[in-house]
Image 1 (cartoon, rainbow, N blue to C red):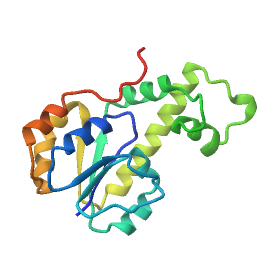
Image 2: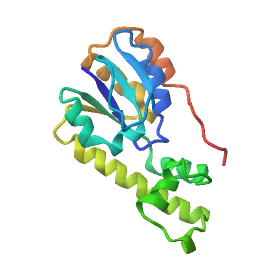
Image 3: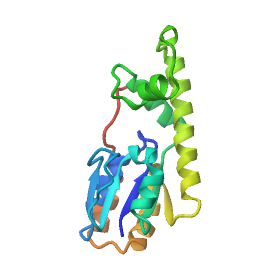
Length: 181
């Protein structure tokens, strides 16, 4: 069985992946490849916010997969995306504003208020898509703020073997912090 951790991004996915690395009977990676390449080994846990853009293909490729919907307080996620900005096209918020929503050149003013508004729309859209996708799929919902409470149930559900106390210790650490406010 493969496990896919779906999320909006900026929600503790690296922390969650580091906790999963304490599982010895699965391989674990964080954003290991292009989301367009859905070629993962058996007994693998992939943690990647970009998987949310490939849900249909993911379900077709891995019909027996188990999923985690990783969440963080919405406003914290939105602020984190907005703080990261859109200074180059490789950032997902840049793609959301200018590629997906096709903002006009005249409306490219990236004010903090606009970035937060657009980040909120993107986060709400991705989260809704994940919720809809998971309606009929086996999954666990994990809020990163209380991940240590849900992680043991997830661990049992996937029959993980390894160092659960070390995994729980990883969940207490913050990874991939964005710019300070």
